[in-house]
Amino acid sequence: MWEKTIPINEVREIRGKTSVFLGLGAISKIFDILKELKEKHIDSIMVVTGKSSYRSSGAWGFVEKALDENSIKYALYDSVSPNPTTIEVDQATKIAVEIGAKAVIGIGGGSPIDAAKSVAIMALNTEHSAADLYEYKFTPTKALPVIAINTTHGTGTEANRFAVVSILEKEYKPAIAYDISYPIYSIDDPKLMVSLSKNQTAYTAIDAINHVVEACTTVVTSPYSILLAKETIRLIGKYLPLALENGENLEARYYLTYASLIAGMCFDNGMVHLTHALEHPLSAVKPDLAHGLGLAVILPSIVRNIYPARPETLADVLASIVPGLEGNKEEAEKAAKGVESWLRSVGITDTLTTLGFKEEDIEKLTELTFNTPSLNLLLGCSPVPASKELITTIYRESL
Image (tube, rainbow, N blue to C red):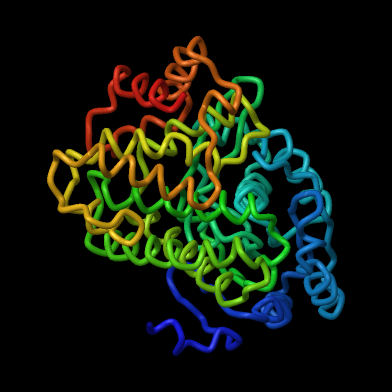
């Protein structure tokens, strides 16, 4: 396969709205990035990250040294939770304003990078709160530059405009997507991901799977999104088992990282629909629930229910993990069972029931799906009508 012809230890630049440095050792590019920013008189930076992975991954050692070498003042906010909240964004924003931050660095997976994007907006819109941003009470037109240093292979946020932050008191987990939110530079260094546990490795890769299953089947998809979707699933199907077998397999980490990257670009173009719209209430109600795991448990039901509307596309895109699909409406159950079987092969055996949800929770989850700000936009992209009956059915089939 062509993958063997790519030298994974050579850092290559992938250009879209964001310039992404991909490859083993790409973290060293932070020195060039910060030198460039300093030359542009960016001399104060807010760093937003989670509680530990920024250090355990090895990323912080490079970032701290690069900041010091370029005499850039900085403040560190390292309290972003796995499902970031508007409270955390407001806390980090307050610090960013106090130090006069002119840019924001996000280090981590989707949660810290999404929080960093949010801080970049809020630092220039201090008359509002982060809850205002995520309840669409204003439309931002400006943000600080963002540099994203990615430490997981699932999010795709390092190359797109999306960010997700929870409003805890309302059990809302909305999304935003503004052109001002694209990072100016991102770093995808597979060496930063070898410390991911088996569960984290699986959950993040499954997040990328869901990004593309949705993006290639929305009502606004394009040939580009379908192309990226097929390659994403092929790469994850091939390399996720290898990474689960040996977390230090750098070739596997490289291609999972690349797959996640192009999956982020895929849904930046094609959008997402039901799986994300239905998962957000799950992890809003249970903030400790890993996003990728929540997606995994509802994916088979969603495939079952959307397959008749997009059989040709899904048969082609899923071929590497669910072989034998012919692209006709009648094989929806076969496709759903095939996805479920593949998930089990990579260690995902949970259901909504084992995650602590019950039949009596379905009504509340359904209401949150329709009432959470922004999720109506995702529901509107569904290839089948997103009725309350359908949403209820998917939750019930996933118990």
